Amino acid sequence: MKVQAEVSLYPLRQKNLAKPIGWFCELLQKDEIEVRTGPMSSLITADSEVIFRSLREAFEQLAKEYEVVLTAKISNACPECKEE
View 1: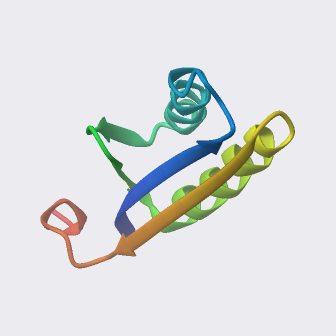
View 2: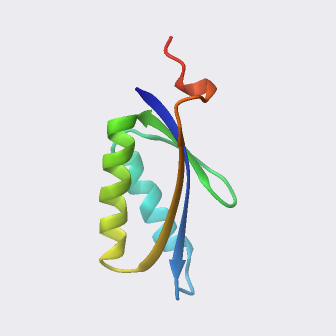
């Protein structure tokens, strides 16, 4: 099932926030997830299995180097989720 998620990554105790956030987005895009980055969060769209797996893997990668908080709201009711 196709889903869309609004995700926010908050690197803790970092002066340069762009590096871990950019890395997070790059990791998601490797799995062919559509990523639309906004000023406070990103919208990602893909199959639910891909979204959940990719979020877990990206979080685990980042958590090896940074202290982070990840929030996600996931929906199957978005216009982009409708099967054509």
